[in-house]
Image (tube, rainbow, N blue to C red):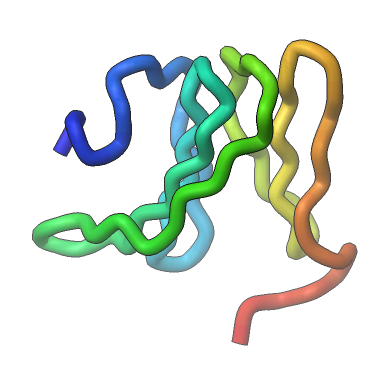
Length: 80
């Protein structure tokens, strides 16, 4: 599984429902669906280096890079 999500992961995974959010040192986010065999459901690049853990709060995902704090989602939004 490590090859599917990259080798340079730092910090902890963020979890919400059955989704697991990872952020690599190179700034790639990987979203996994939890299960007996985790499945990669999304990959995105934030374009900046990061050695932080994704944080999830109030319907948003926060990613801290070396230069920015990125908020994804709308405050108070919930997954349906």
